[in-house]
Length: 71
Image 1 (cartoon, one colour):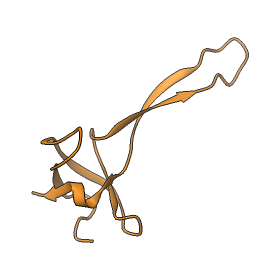
Image 2 (cartoon, one colour):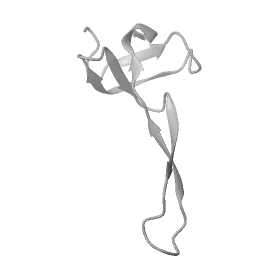
Image 3 (cartoon, one colour):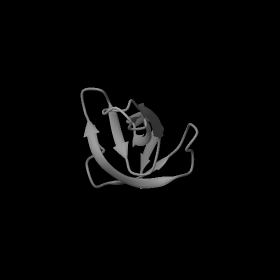
């Protein structure tokens, strides 16, 4: 895999097409990379204590290497 941590990449397909960002982490076995501010997913978190409300957290999800291009 030619894309490493710290590389600048551009998204070439998908809902985030045209966006650019820096690679935060690479997953060579899965052929995926984690790009900052791209491919955000919403996770619903249950309340941990009684009386506390649940939360919705946005977290970056890995994107396939074939969907990004090194700049």
